Structure formats: C-alpha cells, structure tokens
Amino acid sequence: MRRPDLTNRQAEVLNFMISYFREQHQLPSSRSIADHFNFASQTAAMSHIFALTKKGYITHNDVGKYKFVLPIQGFDIDAIFGTCPKDAPA
Image (cartoon, rainbow, N blue to C red; front, side, top):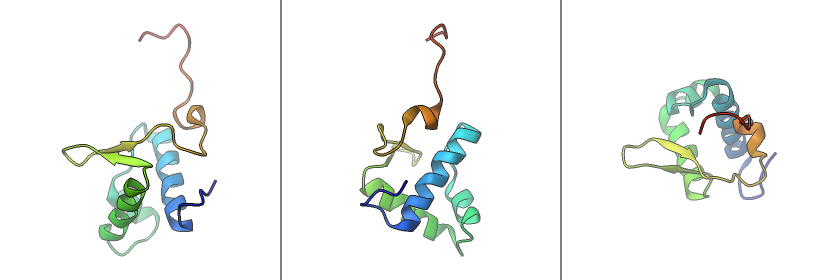
C-alpha cells in the first residue's frame, strides 16, 4: 500500500523492509536494499532510509541501527510481525 506522503520508490523500499523483516526477523542492511533495487551504491539506499526516517516510518538509535516506528500507518502490524500466542512467555 502506498502512503500519500511517500514517493513510489520510498513505498517500495518500505514494503521491501517489511517483507524482509517478516522473513529474516531483522531489518535489511542498506547494502541489502541497494542490491535488491539494483542501486549503483549504498548511498541511494541510505537516502531512502533517511527519507523514511524523516517521514516518521523508521528511527535510528545512537549506533545507527534502525527500527520501525510503531504503528506504521496503513500497515497491519500483525501482518508484519505475526501474532503471539496467548500462552507464550513474556
């Protein structure tokens, strides 16, 4: 789903990040994003990551790791992260 505040490419990058997270249980590196989209450099991937950060979809910690800002508007959180069984340990 494309959010009106995202460009088509930013929406594609965000969707890729969500899909990657669902499969790998971690967010993709900027190199993985660059490889997936055939960007000439990681700089292009980083510019999209920066735009998603500026628009409030992801955030960075002090060591440069990024994470989703929850809730991600327009996305079903259970579809991204899955559901936790009620009897699962906390």
